[in-house]
Amino acid sequence: MRDLLAAYPPLVRSATQLAVTYRGRTILGVITGFFPLLTMAVWLTVVAEAGPPAGWTTGDFLSYYAAATLLWNLSGDQVVWQWDADMRSGDLSVRLLRPVHPFHQYATSNLGHRLVSLTMLVPVLVIAALLVPGLDYPTNPVRLAATALALALAYAVGLTMASTFALIGFWSTQTTNAWMLWWGLGSFTSGWVAPLALMPDWVRTAAAILPFRTTMGFPVELLMGRLDVRQTLFGFAVGLGWLAVFALLYRIIWRRGIRRYQAVAG
Amino acid sequence: MIEVRDLAKHFPVHRREPGLRAALRSLVRREYHTVRAVEQVSFTIPEGEVVGFLGPNGAGKTTTLKCLTGLLHPTAGTVRVLGHTPHRREPAFLRRISLVMGQRNALFWDLPAADAFEVNRAIYGLAEAPYRSALDELVALLELEPLLGKQVRVLSLGERMRCELAGALLHRPDVLFLDEPTLGLDVNGQAAVRTFLRDYNGRFGATILLTSHYMADVTALARRVLVIDHGTLRFDGDLAALVEAHSPHRLIRVTLREPAPAHTWTGFGELAAVDGAVVTLLVPRAETAAIAARLLTTLPVEDVAIEDPPVEDIIRAVFADA
Image (cartoon, rainbow over the protein chains, first blue to last red):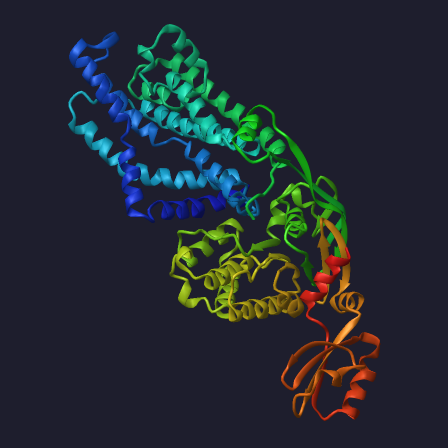
């Protein structure tokens, strides 16, 4: 375990180096990092033309999607694409020969890329929060600390969920398609399509116990001050529960899947 | 060190006829057949030995190597390497082996070689002093100094292979698996890699199992060879014994003062090649010395040389016999 922890910083550092190797890719990565603002623009138009839906004002949408942008950049789903490419090219064999489990190799790779995105994104968001009228978050230190924990939990759940899904690659070449289907369905209960407060009751009920809200809606709602203590604790409990479930599923599926690995392409 | 008992590896492979109709039919009904890539293979390699692994394409060499390095789970049989069961992929095992694949890049493609080596240092948990010592030595031996600042992806094939070797050896593996390490290299590049590997084996006593289609790799490095074909081990022993067992003939190359007519050679052996005054005769192995003596006494010979047929021809004969 000590060896593993010691390997994390240099592996993340190398992934960061890789993430900034190509200027064009880096710039495109930063631009696509602001993708949630497109959805925000749609909702702002709705507010302007039809009035605030369910009492959500322009300021609420601004605050929601600015925070959602942060969560969008904490996604772990890059792992699925990387895994799929490695499985097809045979590069997974190279990873399997290293004395660090591939999970950690993909995790550090993802972390390195995320750090690059966040380094450019966070200052922009902070400046926006200071300058844009209506973009406002409660500054209670306890709430901010809880939000930081929720962000870490969001990343951990997103990463383990994506990593578990990636293991489908041991059985099928359709990992990315399966993930897109899963992510697409999940986006209704994550808070990505719309804030969960605007969704029907049955969607909100389902979202409360499914894993997707942990990866977006929960930290955003927490940051916006829309959750009381009981709701906050419940949100953490659900997130931690899913983290445990995905970690367990990963172990089980890995053990079965690795036996099937054919080490193709050389 | 390496113990393989009754190793078998089978793969289920999806098969369909060519054409649109067959493609559509395969959406509904899939047909699989089992490829028996390796069957009943057993051998032992002691510490420090260099062994050549020979066989035609698809014979099962790489599959066996992948079982030995833990990439593949054997279908049957047992494999032990350094006291470990490879497919468990314990970090303690993976830190003591390396697999170099000539056609695969194991270094970080987009990083300069020096940074890629640093990543390997982190992955293998190497302390600064032994890492620096190993790196300095490898940089000197493989002449890597001018390459360290270049991205791996812009290196030539030979340069990349030298970097691959350095990356694979930074942690000083006790067992080195090499799958076509000189593939695509020019003659100088091949020679450099061979020299380096022989030196590495000599200095660190590393066990090396090597597959190559270049017989010169095998003859330069290994005294013992394993010959595999259709997944089955056909031969395990000294290269010299293999030559003796599968080549009942030797070659006598005779240089005369001037070209001689073909009938001159009647009674000496089969004419294998004629190049002016230089003639190559194929003769029964047991009669080689007597025929050579007769040539010297009956013809105006300037030079005579006795050699075994090329190992490639002998290996081909092994497979043909099988």
